[in-house]
Amino acid sequence: MKILLAAINAKYIHSNLAVYSLRAYARKYGKEADIAEYTINQPLDEILMDIYTQRPDILCFSCYLWNISYVRLLLREIPKILPDVEIWLGGPEVSYNARELLGQYPCLAGVICGEGEETFLELMEYYHVRSETGAGRVPTVTGAALLDIRGIVCRGSDGSIMETAPRPALDLSAVPFVYEDIGEFRNRIVYYESSRGCPFSCSYCLSSIDKCLRFRDIRLVKKEIQFFIDQKVPQVKFVDRTFNCRHEHAMEVWKYIKEHDKGVTNFHFEIGADLLNDEEISLIRSMRPGLIQFEIGIQSANRETICEIKRKMDLEKAERAVAQVRQSRNVHQHLDLIAGLPYEDYDSFAESFDRVYAMKPDQLQLGFLKVLKGSLMHERTEEYGIVYQDRPPYEVLSTKWLSYADVIRLKKIEEMVEVYYNSGQFRHTVEQAEKEFPGAFAMYSALADYYERNALFGVSHSRIARYEHLFCFLEEHTGGRSDSTGAGQGDASAARSTKMAEYTQWLTVDLYLRDNVRNRPWFLPENKVSSDEAASFYRTEEEERRYLKDYAGYDRRQMRKMTHLERLFGRLILFDYRKRDPLNGDAKVYQIAEERKGTE
Image 1 (cartoon, one colour):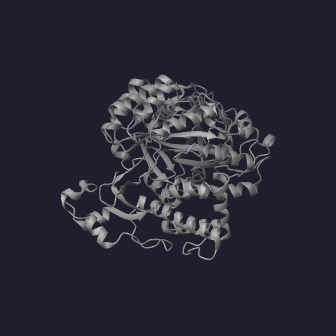
Image 2: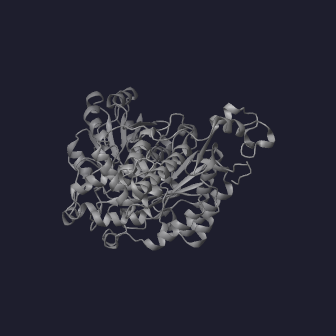
Image 3: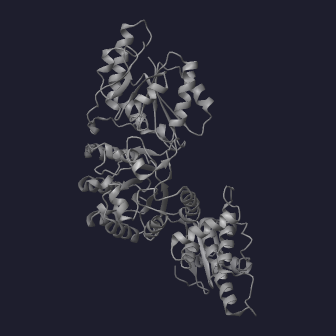
């Protein structure tokens, strides 16, 4: 009997922990179970051909928001080429409307609802018994034995749709480690869970439905973390919904990671910032830069909204914790906001944005409410006047408080935030520009207006073009011209010209922090470092290598490729691309005194 566990991921770099957990738990049938991982970017025919080539007897799809549309298309085609295959679905996107799916797709044998490991194992045992008593092929899924399996929706012997009792929560420590053959995951993100369930009840989230919060045995967790460290896995993402909801567990894991770090592996955690205590913050601040990173869901700063969505969060405490962690500049912090929540209108969201932006996260994700089947938010759509898309990911279109026009505008602001903030490529320029606006939201709103007026949305822009657009926006906002001397135009004109000259220098800083670009944007003047000055700086005598002491063995031409000299703000600045910030990838910067005795 051949079993195929199919996962359709959002990107190639992703992996699907669920299908590997199913196979590992049903390891007695492991030789019969193959895993096939695809992506939503592959042509449908390519996936269809691969499934046909493998000719499984049982085909199981792992279903999520990002792939359910693809799975639905495959469900219409697979029975045409593999009429005898038994098709099962599982995952959060099908666990709450299983009856509806069985009604829509006659090819479906059933749906595994909720946690799947034990259910999948029993399903495999059922099929083995049936195949051993049959005529050498897997029979149609009918009979009382199937209905003894808890946690499924399937077809009864009379063709009716039957639902069995829910399955009790699984002991997480009983799930085998799935990464023994780490070679399968080279160049891909590794996902790992040390707990399941969530202690909170946020109305927009499916995780809140699983109230049985369980932790994997800490001895297993440490052993498995050590495996990742020893194998030099680049990144491990913990999928625990609120990793630090139990202080003792979080401390054990973080201490172990710090003490056994080999300088390679990065660990990602989703945390509640307001749950961090002084002991945890002290430990976090003592870690190697880049060892860990945090994703923190703030979602809204509107107290009425937070209360309505049943989210327990002390915003002031979260602000303090984020600030304390940021002081050490060793942990990347990604903060989330959600537009479209109850009681949050456009102006209220702008206030939430400014408050979270003021926390200075390394990334700020402006997301939009997704109305998930099974969530409390889904049940209250009429009460909140929520209109959302019928197609996944069921994103909000409007609410009582937020019009569709507002959503469109926020989408455009979101794009500006992604380009000019989250990319990290314009950090210094944007910090200066913010001072000219009432708040950060107002600045990104004005930037979105500029893009719209100049038909820049929907166009693929190069990195250099983005700098040029930002320069033109700032020039328009200040009303100045960079090539103006200000003579005869009055003090205001001279001030605008000075301001643009300053912006030009900040744009130069941001540009060269990332790359030693050769083709400068049109608005940048020629580098003020003369060829003689550069030649003198890159001389090869050892005693002259105060800033280039790590370049032994390189000649001047090679050194000039790996570094860049620029005169900015009246100083000689060196950008060193061999030494980069582990958090944002920026080149190390040195201020060079004219007599070559400057301080770093």
